[in-house]
Length: 195
Image 1 (spheres, rainbow, N blue to C red):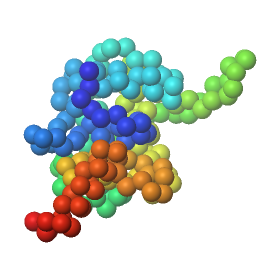
Image 2: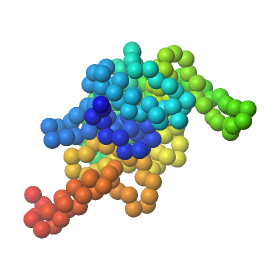
Image 3: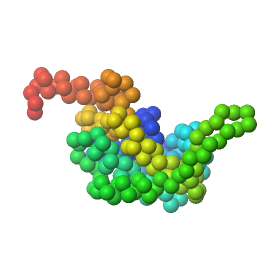
Image 4: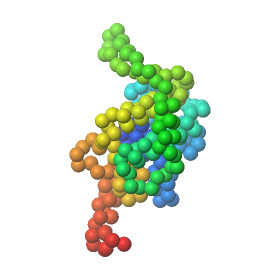
Protein backbone atom coordinates (compact mmCIF):
# COMPACT_ATOMS: atom_id res chain seq x y z
CA UNK A 1 0.00 0.00 0.00
CA UNK A 2 1.32 3.43 -0.93
CA UNK A 3 2.28 5.96 1.72
CA UNK A 4 1.51 8.82 -0.66
CA UNK A 5 -1.32 11.18 0.16
CA UNK A 6 -3.95 11.03 -2.59
CA UNK A 7 -6.13 14.13 -2.51
CA UNK A 8 -8.13 13.80 -5.73
CA UNK A 9 -5.92 16.31 -7.52
CA UNK A 10 -4.95 15.89 -11.19
CA UNK A 11 -2.70 12.82 -11.44
CA UNK A 12 0.35 14.92 -12.24
CA UNK A 13 -0.18 16.85 -8.98
CA UNK A 14 -0.67 13.55 -7.14
CA UNK A 15 2.74 12.52 -8.48
CA UNK A 16 4.32 15.75 -7.19
CA UNK A 17 2.73 15.03 -3.82
CA UNK A 18 4.63 11.76 -3.37
CA UNK A 19 7.17 13.94 -1.52
CA UNK A 20 5.84 15.23 1.77
CA UNK A 21 6.93 16.25 5.23
CA UNK A 22 6.20 14.06 8.21
CA UNK A 23 7.19 13.84 11.84
CA UNK A 24 10.56 12.44 10.80
CA UNK A 25 11.26 15.05 8.11
CA UNK A 26 10.81 14.79 4.36
CA UNK A 27 9.27 11.51 3.21
CA UNK A 28 9.35 9.99 -0.27
CA UNK A 29 6.54 7.59 -1.18
CA UNK A 30 8.50 6.35 -4.23
CA UNK A 31 11.77 5.23 -2.64
CA UNK A 32 11.97 1.86 -4.40
CA UNK A 33 10.33 -0.20 -7.14
CA UNK A 34 7.80 -1.70 -4.71
CA UNK A 35 6.70 1.80 -3.66
CA UNK A 36 6.34 2.82 -7.31
CA UNK A 37 4.29 -0.31 -8.05
CA UNK A 38 2.08 0.44 -5.03
CA UNK A 39 1.54 4.07 -6.07
CA UNK A 40 0.74 3.08 -9.65
CA UNK A 41 -1.73 0.49 -8.34
CA UNK A 42 -3.37 3.18 -6.17
CA UNK A 43 -3.89 5.46 -9.18
CA UNK A 44 -4.66 2.64 -11.66
CA UNK A 45 -8.44 3.24 -11.68
CA UNK A 46 -7.87 6.89 -12.59
CA UNK A 47 -5.28 5.98 -15.23
CA UNK A 48 -7.79 3.61 -16.80
CA UNK A 49 -10.59 6.18 -16.68
CA UNK A 50 -8.52 9.18 -17.81
CA UNK A 51 -6.09 7.59 -20.25
CA UNK A 52 -7.50 4.19 -21.09
CA UNK A 53 -4.45 2.54 -19.51
CA UNK A 54 -4.68 -0.84 -17.84
CA UNK A 55 -1.56 -1.41 -15.76
CA UNK A 56 0.08 -4.69 -14.95
CA UNK A 57 1.63 -4.96 -11.48
CA UNK A 58 5.27 -4.49 -12.50
CA UNK A 59 6.56 -0.92 -12.99
CA UNK A 60 9.60 -2.38 -14.71
CA UNK A 61 12.23 0.13 -15.68
CA UNK A 62 10.06 3.23 -15.13
CA UNK A 63 10.60 3.64 -11.38
CA UNK A 64 13.70 5.82 -11.63
CA UNK A 65 12.26 7.89 -14.50
CA UNK A 66 9.01 8.38 -12.56
CA UNK A 67 11.00 9.80 -9.63
CA UNK A 68 12.99 11.99 -12.04
CA UNK A 69 9.74 13.24 -13.59
CA UNK A 70 8.30 13.92 -10.14
CA UNK A 71 11.36 15.96 -9.14
CA UNK A 72 11.22 17.94 -12.39
CA UNK A 73 7.52 18.66 -11.87
CA UNK A 74 8.16 19.86 -8.30
CA UNK A 75 10.84 22.27 -9.52
CA UNK A 76 8.50 23.71 -12.14
CA UNK A 77 5.60 23.84 -9.66
CA UNK A 78 7.74 25.73 -7.16
CA UNK A 79 8.53 28.30 -9.83
CA UNK A 80 4.93 28.53 -11.06
CA UNK A 81 3.60 29.09 -7.52
CA UNK A 82 6.43 31.29 -6.19
CA UNK A 83 6.77 28.62 -3.51
CA UNK A 84 8.66 30.08 -0.50
CA UNK A 85 9.27 26.63 1.04
CA UNK A 86 12.73 25.07 0.87
CA UNK A 87 13.22 23.08 -2.33
CA UNK A 88 13.23 19.36 -1.59
CA UNK A 89 15.11 18.48 -4.81
CA UNK A 90 18.19 19.90 -6.48
CA UNK A 91 17.27 20.05 -10.17
CA UNK A 92 17.94 23.02 -12.46
CA UNK A 93 14.96 24.55 -14.26
CA UNK A 94 16.43 23.76 -17.69
CA UNK A 95 16.96 20.13 -16.66
CA UNK A 96 13.40 19.93 -15.34
CA UNK A 97 12.01 21.24 -18.64
CA UNK A 98 14.15 18.83 -20.65
CA UNK A 99 13.00 15.87 -18.52
CA UNK A 100 9.34 16.79 -18.87
CA UNK A 101 9.57 17.22 -22.64
CA UNK A 102 11.63 14.07 -23.13
CA UNK A 103 9.20 11.84 -21.23
CA UNK A 104 5.98 13.16 -22.80
CA UNK A 105 6.04 11.01 -25.93
CA UNK A 106 2.32 10.85 -26.63
CA UNK A 107 -0.05 11.60 -29.43
CA UNK A 108 -3.77 12.31 -29.26
CA UNK A 109 -6.24 10.03 -31.01
CA UNK A 110 -9.97 10.17 -31.33
CA UNK A 111 -11.72 7.01 -30.17
CA UNK A 112 -15.38 6.70 -31.13
CA UNK A 113 -17.05 3.40 -30.28
CA UNK A 114 -19.95 2.34 -32.51
CA UNK A 115 -22.53 2.81 -29.74
CA UNK A 116 -20.68 5.26 -27.53
CA UNK A 117 -19.41 8.76 -27.13
CA UNK A 118 -16.25 10.03 -28.82
CA UNK A 119 -13.25 10.56 -26.57
CA UNK A 120 -9.75 11.96 -26.87
CA UNK A 121 -7.16 9.34 -25.86
CA UNK A 122 -3.41 9.80 -25.51
CA UNK A 123 -1.35 7.03 -27.07
CA UNK A 124 2.31 6.24 -26.54
CA UNK A 125 4.58 3.28 -27.22
CA UNK A 126 5.81 0.76 -24.67
CA UNK A 127 4.52 -1.30 -21.79
CA UNK A 128 1.61 0.00 -19.69
CA UNK A 129 3.90 1.56 -17.06
CA UNK A 130 5.85 3.32 -19.85
CA UNK A 131 2.59 4.70 -21.23
CA UNK A 132 1.55 5.85 -17.74
CA UNK A 133 4.85 7.72 -17.42
CA UNK A 134 4.32 9.41 -20.80
CA UNK A 135 0.72 10.28 -19.86
CA UNK A 136 1.83 11.90 -16.58
CA UNK A 137 4.54 13.89 -18.39
CA UNK A 138 1.98 15.01 -20.97
CA UNK A 139 -0.35 16.08 -18.14
CA UNK A 140 2.56 18.09 -16.74
CA UNK A 141 2.93 19.93 -20.04
CA UNK A 142 -0.81 20.60 -20.08
CA UNK A 143 -0.69 21.82 -16.46
CA UNK A 144 2.20 24.23 -16.85
CA UNK A 145 1.35 25.27 -20.40
CA UNK A 146 -2.33 25.94 -19.75
CA UNK A 147 -4.67 27.97 -17.62
CA UNK A 148 -4.57 25.47 -14.76
CA UNK A 149 -1.03 26.70 -13.96
CA UNK A 150 -2.57 29.87 -12.54
CA UNK A 151 -4.66 27.80 -10.11
CA UNK A 152 -1.75 25.62 -8.94
CA UNK A 153 -0.80 26.40 -5.32
CA UNK A 154 1.80 25.33 -2.81
CA UNK A 155 0.19 24.37 0.49
CA UNK A 156 1.73 26.76 3.02
CA UNK A 157 0.45 24.98 6.12
CA UNK A 158 3.12 24.08 8.68
CA UNK A 159 5.16 21.01 7.70
CA UNK A 160 3.43 20.48 4.36
CA UNK A 161 5.21 20.12 1.02
CA UNK A 162 2.15 19.35 -1.09
CA UNK A 163 0.68 21.17 -4.07
CA UNK A 164 -2.97 21.52 -5.06
CA UNK A 165 -5.12 23.06 -7.77
CA UNK A 166 -7.29 25.78 -6.29
CA UNK A 167 -10.79 24.77 -7.34
CA UNK A 168 -12.68 27.14 -5.04
CA UNK A 169 -12.06 30.82 -4.31
CA UNK A 170 -11.81 30.20 -0.56
CA UNK A 171 -9.48 27.20 -0.71
CA UNK A 172 -6.09 27.95 0.86
CA UNK A 173 -4.65 24.52 1.75
CA UNK A 174 -4.31 21.07 0.24
CA UNK A 175 -6.57 19.46 2.85
CA UNK A 176 -8.75 20.18 5.86
CA UNK A 177 -5.98 18.82 8.11
CA UNK A 178 -3.53 21.38 6.79
CA UNK A 179 -6.13 24.12 7.18
CA UNK A 180 -6.58 23.14 10.83
CA UNK A 181 -2.81 23.14 11.46
CA UNK A 182 -2.45 26.57 9.85
CA UNK A 183 -5.31 28.01 11.94
CA UNK A 184 -3.87 26.52 15.16
CA UNK A 185 -0.46 27.99 14.34
CA UNK A 186 -1.94 31.45 13.62
CA UNK A 187 -3.94 31.31 16.86
CA UNK A 188 -0.85 30.32 18.84
CA UNK A 189 1.24 33.11 17.29
CA UNK A 190 -1.44 35.73 18.02
CA UNK A 191 -1.74 34.69 21.64
CA UNK A 192 1.82 33.60 22.49
CA UNK A 193 4.03 35.82 20.36
CA UNK A 194 5.89 35.15 17.14
CA UNK A 195 8.44 32.70 18.59
